[in-house]
Length: 131
Length: 103
Image (cartoon, rainbow over all chains, first blue to last red; front, side, top):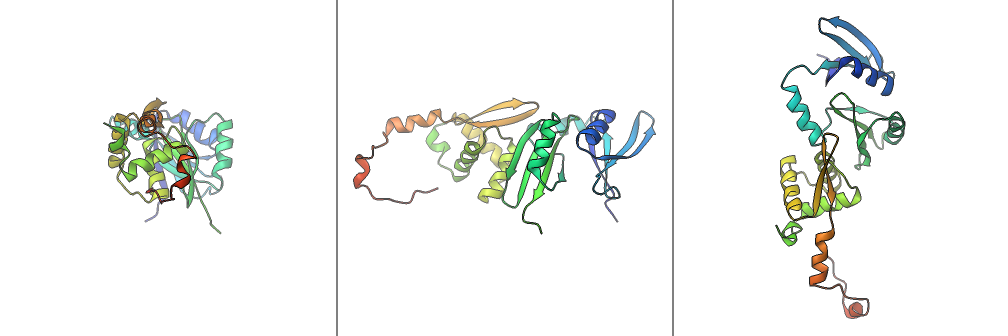
């Protein structure tokens, strides 16, 4: 068993695809029309053969209150690893991304949390002291 | 809720410390800071209740930013302590001994 895909629920798949590729810098891997929606996945430029992130339509009624509660308490839907949180924060702010939590040193990790404009908060995390 | 009871708890004092360090934190950020920096592993539910106590005492206020609820430290109610027991001047304290304060 392998973890080849993981997903985020997004309000609007096309808008999400633009944000996750043009703003965050991921690469489109699959965009397969499936009726009303599409099966869209993106990958990291640093690991194009790695885990794919599925941009899942947030169509189910239960998704709405679930994500609302998470965002209200500032809880990220998922997290991405970065080498330098400060540098990513600076880059994304310049792209107009809104951060709920600026880079914060928590001892073993540095984290920050931003709004993906598609209904989610996303955490970026840098592990400190890695050789 | 009086401020004395509100600050008579280590976790609530740590929450105020973290909000002084950075204003406008979500519940998630506060919980992360409490675990990673203070070793306080209380549940989000428990921290949320501590926040309610602090808010009732007027020591924090909350505001929505976007769709997130953020928390700010509000120091004004603490003035009541200094007014009740005025803080001594340097001259007054020249005879006192240093004692460790509880964190």
